Image (tube, rainbow, N blue to C red; front, side, top):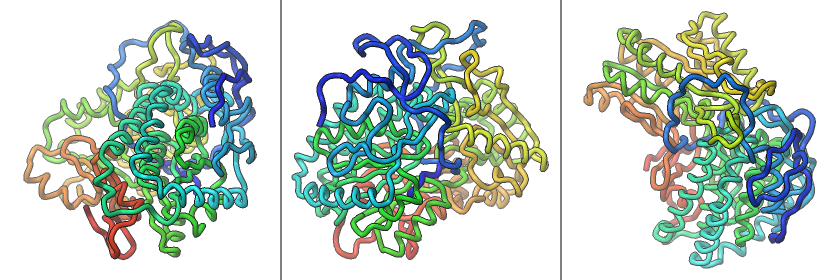
Length: 582
């Protein structure tokens, strides 16, 4: 996953220039006059590419498979430019946005502090609003202010908390399309997946609002606020979802914006929530600068982290030393095994879905472990499916008023990550990996002359060498690797290559074989012939080995993770001194 670094509403629309550049498309009806350039300028300042972020797997129907690409030059869909999105955000939440930047939220108000960093959109390299980075001292002040909010909020009756969170969900629903459009520009999600990210957050929290009462019976809020440090790939359905459930359970919440993207979407979502009196804090800054406050501060009651193993290990050490409640979701190499299998039509149907969002998900499947005797039949099913993948600019259409394009994925999170992954592929081939498929940039949908530095076309490699990062770690991009095996022991060893994973799948015709082998696969969720995902509502989620540390979440477990129960309670999870499955 991407490695995050742990590191009152005004009426009337504002009409200033958004950060960014480039001509605005005509505004949608009722959105106010068309206008100026969006915030930010100059080169982006993304964190070094991490190994990948968290994720709920995308929902919604699979896009129709493509026909021939249009020969006419594509144009930006009307009303969807960054300028349009920025202007609409200023109108909806003038308290949280300025002409050229977003604000930090702490001490119950929006603060024009921090150093606004430049940023660029992965979609086309154009300038957008960057995170306003705070220093460590200001972050410590924000944590102390959050503790004051927590001490008041924990005594607010549950009925009132439910009403306030429900009102926030209504506001998010009203502005769901704007939130999705911000996600398209900030993290490159195709429209279908951006909408799904927003809708999953709203629908998931509503489930808790309706059913949280029995989950909280005999439980109390933590002694201090929950600190959320999350990756960039699911700002709404992972981070905002968690924040609102944590608040519903009686906690104040402080969150750090992901360095690589999502700051404007999160700012708008938090602005809508705090109007309803929900005690949220949203700050930006580098992990090194803010981790002392957001992880180690004695005021923090729980640390919730989503990101890569290197950063996660540092957070895990800190919380273990302090005996602090924690939920640390990290990456693992999720694998799909194929053994004594014959339903190739089913595999062909699922392959395009596995490429949603360019596999920038913690539950993506980048590794197929295939029985050597079935390799020819596997390729006959796999290659036609991967050739149908549709990629490109998420807002490029034939005519300005056409529907949004139906894509499997757009860009990676930034040009640096795209170069890193491209270099890893080239190095793996140089060391002996066999390229089975490489998509062509000429098949992607782009605007004439646009920057395409963040785009990587799908690649499939056979037998990446053990010296390659692609052999043992998730690529967090549209690269599949295939390993061939001859025995069940080799199958299990290859499927367990990364010391624990979040999900895995085994495709086999024989139920007895699945029942015997599945418990030996070190993944929290194992599917038979179908992909597993983070899940929604009452579906539990966690990881084995190094893929997860701390309390498991999902359903009732998410509430238990951020509340106190009976004395001596052992939460289900993966802890230094015990591992307890639900």
